[in-house]
Length: 288
Image (cartoon, one colour):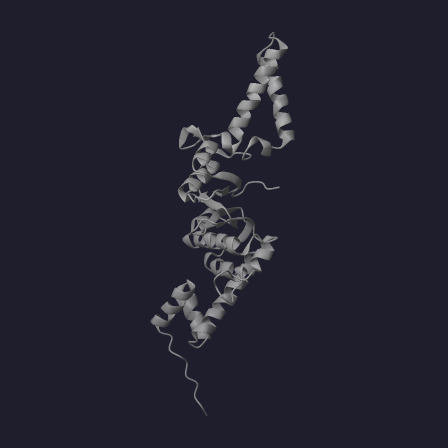
């Protein structure tokens, strides 16, 4: 009768598995024991374990998270993602930060999926044989929280740049027309958008109904503060109030946050760039 001999699970073997998967030392050792020292089988055991943890966590609320950003080296393509988790400590964890950037790259390379579910079903952009869901499961297995993509944005062509606030809660992706790439300037414009929250690029992009509503507010405020003055003066005061509101609200007319002697529109024009669009995500904000 042939005697069964169990493979020796050495610390070096466990370390190799840990380096490949980031799984805890104890989990790696258990997986290798179960796999009788077979590295590939141990990796599959860990993957199945992570998938089970992911399924168990999937129903829990994801009230925290981080905005992930990725822009190609030539500035021609960029992706932005609002990635959610359950708690602030996990949102700040290095593995979660890395995952957010990786999934932003997924969006940039594969396009904006029709839904979060459609995205997680995609093949991962660089890890052969793995889906996005499995890539997320690897991190869920380590951090033990529900992690879900929430919103995605992407631009391609022209000049693309972006910025994420240092705490990861707000991020912006900008898209410009122009032949000259200036990533530093686009980053600064995206940072301005993070700080000043413009409602549109230019006046013609603001909802007319919103302008009319603000005009009525301006008229009521002017009438109250200018009682006894001629109607034409009151009307002029109201229009001035509306004009001030628009200057404060549209990106091209806002004073640049790093140099208020120039507007954002003037800054971009001087660089030979014209802003086409921008996407701004803030974790936790209400969405339509």
